[in-house]
Image (tube, rainbow over all chains, first blue to last red):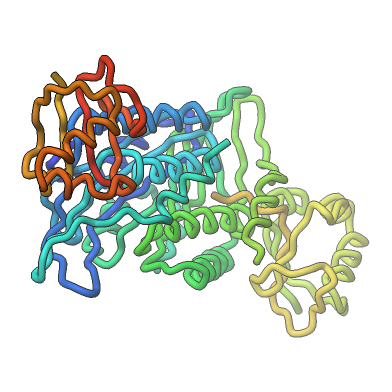
Amino acid sequence: MRIVVQEDRFDIGAETAAFAAGRTDMGAIVTFTGIVREIAESPLEAMVIEHYPGMTEKALTEIAQEASRRWALGDVLVIHRFGRLAPGETIMMIATAAPHRADAFAAAEFLMDYLKSRAPFWKKEITATGDGWVAAKDEDEAALDRWQA
Amino acid sequence: MRIVVQEDRFDIGAETAAFAAGRTDMGAIVTFTGIVREIAESPLEAMVIEHYPGMTEKALTEIAQEASRRWALGDVLVIHRFGRLAPGETIMMIATAAPHRADAFAAAEFLMDYLKSRAPFWKKEITATGDGWVAAKDEDEAALDRWQA
Amino acid sequence: MIDVLYFAWVRERIGLPKERIETQAETVAALVEELKGREARYELAFADSDALRVALDQELSGFDAPLAGVREVAFFPPMTGG
Amino acid sequence: MIDVLYFAWVRERIGLPKERIETQAETVAALVEELKGREARYELAFADSDALRVALDQELSGFDAPLAGVREVAFFPPMTGG
């Protein structure tokens, strides 16, 4: 398991290749990558991501451990950036390795749903017409319900 | 949309990076990679993948088009190898790009479920004690049911 | 004249990947019966048709489908890609 | 003495990321009431507690949780990671 919280850019190609390398015991690798998206209404200059140092790493580790308890996983990777990002830049990625694809997919979706609403990150959009904190979506909170046993 | 059927190896890191590059309109990228897995019972020497040239490309294209009809996708990539592969080698990968993560995940799972049971590939395991065609799993056929409207 | 293709263990049992056949069979099922009547290796390959799939001109099809106008028939076991 | 941290718009409204507070408050809710009584900027930041989340020693918690033994309290809006 590898959890990384950093301001620097990272190379999703290199990370994906390194994560998948040499796995003869895992048949399935799933990755998710989040990218800063242009907003149609108002040109986005940047996305600023604030986080809670210390708690962030702790929350991500707990979410990854919970995924490993629920599914037969070989490995989990979480990389999340903070600071100022331009449109098109990679915000974060996760990867899961499992013997079977259903476990790799379910764990990846679980990680994303929890990371969205339970890891202490906050996004602010910087546009030509002003700045604004991104509001949490009801659908992201609702997405957690499907994982309740 | 890019559909590739080839005998040669491919670099999942480079393919993932190229697929994600320059997307300011897509917030979510999901990839799935299938790897030749060691089997515990009998040491696997190789996996041989046979396919139906012509129909393979057609079936994969139809599956990718159906995914694009069902979900708001920006792009789809499918790479599938045939021929003789050693344990640990990458068999195939798919990637989906979408504005939102739920669409990227659902489309990737749909692609995998259909590709498993509807694209004309057949796997043969070569072991020290003999060769054998991999039998289709009931669970793979059952996985298609969840996509029926 | 119709091209008949075999894949995976169907190919191995019949012993060839492809052949051209002159047939009057009107459906896939009738073609299968005709082939089974030829030789033991066809009988063996087509013994359990539940374990077989068929494609007509590279589209998955049913065993009751008509062969009129079809140029290429392929028989194979359930797919195991991915 | 307890460390109180603020993030995102809570931090912006209060005007600082962190402060040390001497308090007798027994619960998070009591601490919030105490802070709201201090100055208008706290009143503004804590006006809608439904829009707020709290963590005690870096674990998400409820507003009715006791503060006994807690070293670090953090207030912030719902998270928007990923």
